Amino acid sequence: MSSSKEGGRVAAACLLAWVVPGAGHWFLGRRVKAVVFLVLVVLTFTTGVIMKGRVYVANREQPLTYLATFANVALGPLDLIGRRVFYERIIYVFPSESDPMLYQEVMQLNRSKILAVTHEYGTTFVLAAGLMNILLILDVFDIGIGRKR
Amino acid sequence: MMGGVSHFLILCWFSALVGSFFGVLTRSTFREAFKVGALIALLMVGVSLIIAYVMFFLPLGS
Image 1 (cartoon, chains in turn green, brown):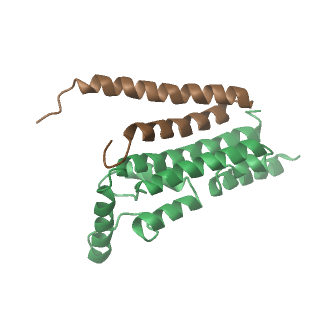
Image 2 (cartoon, one colour):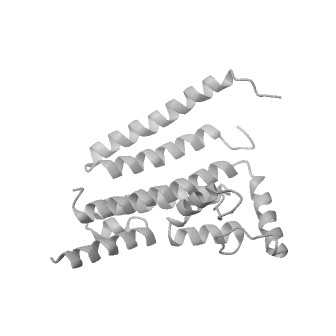
Image 3 (tube, each protein chain N blue to C red):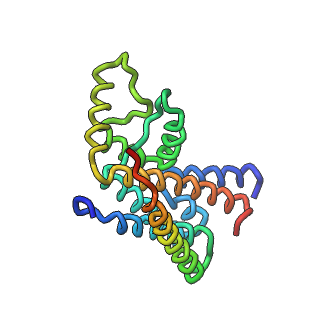
């Protein structure tokens, strides 16, 4: 197989791994692992959402939220579900005070979720699911280029 | 327990998920994956309990 075709195959596998956890492994022929990864990542994410875990939005005043948002976005479409559940809309950047209506609404949603006893645990579960998927994408890349058997 | 939530069970559930993930990620056979996964999960729970026990003696603050 030519190197450009091989590169395309690896890129497709990584993209699939981002869109659906485990799909990259499935694409590369690791079917059993793919199913196990899908179940584990979805279970972790679902547990986090049930526990009212936070899905992060990038906030200029808190630079670490950029990293957390990146970890969330690594979940692909699952992240969209999380944002829809937590913020009732899909946003990635914390609204500025120049948009008082949206600002107040997001703050209100944040406050109501933070009151849950399991909020911090849920946030950890959601972040862990995202980090798991980042590792899966890297694993798919390693398998694709032949670094890992 | 706090409001029907067991912090310990949440810890066990999280450890089981993370342990299973790393077991399957780093090993190729089911037997080895299970061993590594169980070891990671047990270590996570054990280390957390040790840290919790040590922190019990720390003052809560004002």
